[in-house]
Length: 199
Image 1: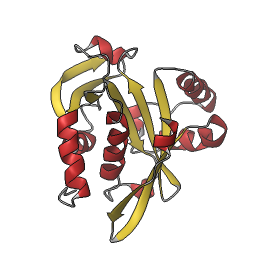
Image 2 (image 1 turned 90 degrees about the vertical axis):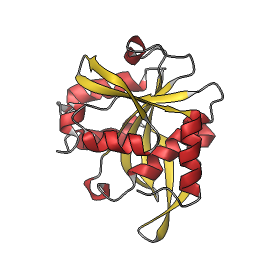
Image 3 (image 1 turned 90 degrees about the horizontal axis):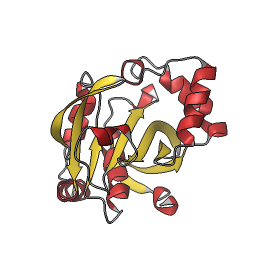
Image 4 (image 1 turned 180 degrees about the horizontal axis):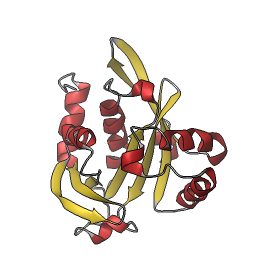
């Protein structure tokens, strides 16, 4: 898994080739960056982590110690610009909301750097991370549960092959539970690599 996450995925955007990498979050390296991102106006309404440094420090340490998830920084050409929580459904609160299968995985994500918003980066990033997830043989589907108010993110997930399951009332939000099954992902991945996937 570690070596796969270091794989670079080249893609064309804005008429030039760029690369995607994912790396594990380092508390020492990334705390200040993540704290800043959680206070960005476009992040606050959906993450609700615009809290004090002391409180966020405890939050991040708790999440880093949680064995059912992996925290990642997504980079474009080596520039950190997004945050990802990649998790197994088994052991997560969302497992109480639908009849999950043992291999199911899930994703939370945000674009942290404002300069990268609205430029199409989210599609190759999400497809690339899904590729990693479906490299796990017993993963038949990946789920997401974005805030019901976050229409842009819901649209992004659907564009990348996610389908609506139901609305869910979670402790911190009302979410839209979505699923992406392996066959549908493989079709979208093929379209992306063949140049027929339109952003």
